[in-house]
Length: 319
Length: 142
Image 1 (cartoon, helix red, strand yellow):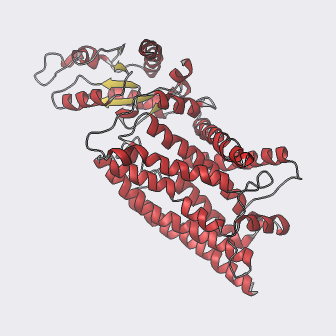
Image 2 (image 1 turned 180 degrees about the horizontal axis):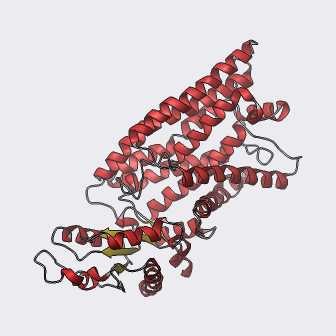
Image 3 (image 1 turned 90 degrees about the vertical axis):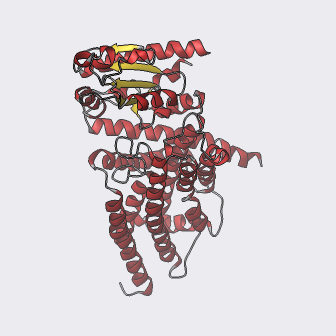
């Protein structure tokens, strides 16, 4: 029992995931700065930010729904915290071995966006209302992309019947080669990368919480102090969870049996994903809400479906 | 507690400025050469996140209520930086019928960055001075 508590609160969940996530976000900021020819902040900048936010005064608007406004950040935070405990890390951590954890993963990935929607909706600001409506529209599409990608992998591993255990998806790839090197899943891989950018709300999908343009931080506009810090921590955990999902879905390669070496290898793969996010952040401009919606519905959905069709054909033995 | 003074969030408000100072502020935020992020700063979109308020412009009658609202919304402790000559002394707009400045009628100004417009280096220096004052204010509250 106490071993499970350590797994939940210290490693790989809890403290380790929060610190890793905050450092990853800071590294992303540094990389964006370097791409632009600046120096950028220190690598622990976001940890300082969160400590400061927890020490600051919390303001609550007069018209806000008090209870939901205060506790909305906890939805996303608790969802992501559970997910880090729940998911297996290739070669490092076994995870909770369930037969249907892919479906639970699909549900939990929507929780941070739901906490944004609840918090923004309860804060009584018109900017937050606009941002919430944009976030809702986009969420409909990018969650759909994620579901199709997950379904594609389930069909591929299950040989036509659907295999919803993440552990088995991982073991299949360790035996038969990673999906990253399988041409049938390359469209799904690109769709997944677009999903990562969209769900993290980095440019070009920043429209729900721009801070230099029309919407002034969107759903975060009325937040200050500790709840804002909770949102920052949720973003940090989300980047860790997305990196773990990326590795389970497409690249669960392990080096030997040693946990430390595999942890190091996990961190290197995570850094590559963060580098990709920073490159997109630094090089792409932001879409408008309608452009973003159309792009998401045209490109990643179609790519994911192409992959699904290829996988069904290959399962049937036609290619 | 000294570690938290390395994470100031900035908010800028234009109170009827001619945009000269705003362009200089944008250069400190966005273009490669002048990097305010290495002090740990981050531009935010909401005054409720901010620790340092950067004010440009001579405070016109039209923009005064918005300035007062922003000053109400800042969580304590905060530091006010007047960027450019206008918020410091109203500059060439002084004694105009529509000007309600200067800024220190409404709030205690901690740092003045004079210039029309000030150079980006001067603004970054002003932010660095504001950081020292902010540190002192946090110590006083404790």
